[in-house]
Image (cartoon, rainbow, N blue to C red; front, side, top):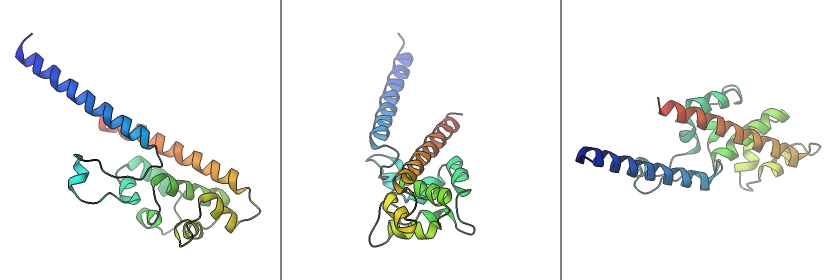
Length: 159
């Protein structure tokens, strides 16, 4: 084999290993994991980790899906501020939308001093609702949004 071919094969192997490692890390962290850049990543050199809103802003498909759920006049970064991760934020948006609960009140319950989880926050705001089922449904919708936007975003990156 020629040296050029060997170099190309070596580069492709290194790239495949790097992509595989990054995929495994993303899979292990899951959709609800907080976002922290890994050593050596481009974001690491830029400073602290991105906010939930900044992460979502990087994916136009996810922005489009979530904008429809936002309360009138509220911007995505305002709505996402204070949430621990994308999954928690997106599930809260869905729950508020599904149950016709004001998002600002649900957000206050989840990000305020007591930091209720989604089910507890739903129960506090509407005790007659099956909060566990509503939270489970909203979590499923958040997972579906993240998966759909990830597939679309990944395919956009390759073209």
